[in-house]
Picture 1 (tube, rainbow, N blue to C red):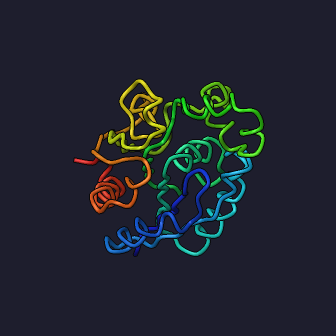
Picture 2 (cartoon, rainbow, N blue to C red):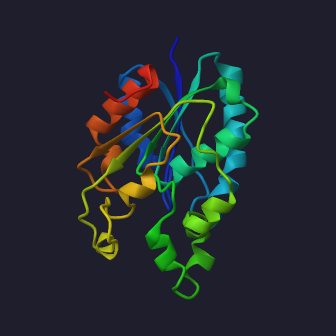
Length: 211
């Protein structure tokens, strides 16, 4: 039976941004589903309710585990889901790709621009203080692997002093509760479109490790 994967996109994107990864994972035998999430003008935890409803639908349709894969803010949403979902027994493994688990320095910079985060409210929830206040547990009942990029070729990345992918610092992606962690030479905008990332994601979902 095909195992299921629910794909969660990042800030100011739609499900279309996860289509390449979805196609690759389908090739590896997974049944994929992507959501359009309100990750632009709402704090990211508003998307939790849509994910919860989708988990309910997927659990009813198939008995196979439901894996979660999220890019950037979508990966942070995974931790919110694991903290609150009623369907934890249906969830298999999870992969975060370029996720600011410890917050985004660029989101902090954006908060200094008058009116910017009032419109792009999702950026408010990427502030390190906001994430700390959510008390997301480091230890999860399911295995989580994280993939980070270190190719900084985006001009906003030049505002960051630490190693980063042009948007998110490496030291923000990693946190103690991860089951596995790997760094690849890709930037934030293209990392989740890479075949290598899909291969590693599929391996983690199947085996619980990247290598």
